[in-house]
Figure 1: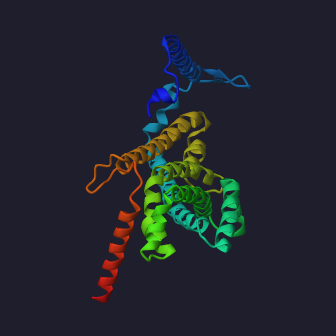
Figure 2: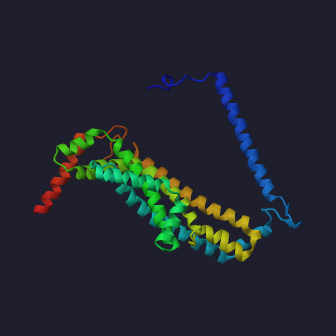
Length: 308
């Protein structure tokens, strides 16, 4: 379908107006950034009359020549990545279980799973951390991992359920027609395709999970935020708070942008132009007969291996 069939092609006046809006909007954004930079770099007078140097003054950044500071920030970063990695594995496991429960044909499995999922999605992550910490008397690490795993697992479960629901009905019918059980059809035919389609969404949710590890600061887990803005500020002095804030922000941005870049790379490689050996045109649903034949071949091979 051509683009002109969906909307009217803009004329010269509309294109000129759009270009002017873009120029004005870009100028406003650049002006706001320049104002922020100048404001942060200007000296300020506190309520008690003391003069505080601007953020860009060299005296606000001399602590970053200390190796111990970077060693501490590195330990905090590793602690953040450790919590994110363990919580991501737990979230993926819980998400798969939620997706299977939500798509079950048995009402006594599907309905309770839906209630639990909505309860987990509706509870704030920080409140869930406090709940785990108080009720189960765990440490900050366990409370953060369980809360992040449960909440993000619920989101991932819904994404996988949507991916399974978006598949053509012929995928499941073909598997059942060749004698596969409903569970085998789900595992061998439906779930791999849904997982591949939803993989960029899942990795994007992992970016959210990585950012939410900063909430573990409240439950006394020693992660990057606590190390950078609490321990280092108390050690070097409050005059370095904003300097440490920007460094911690830069570390978080580096980790999140790296994970987002990974999501884009995976999306390109698993998309229609994957370019790998044996890839097909993913813009069209897979032929149910081909999928069923492949599944039947795999099942026959496994059975033959068992008899041998």
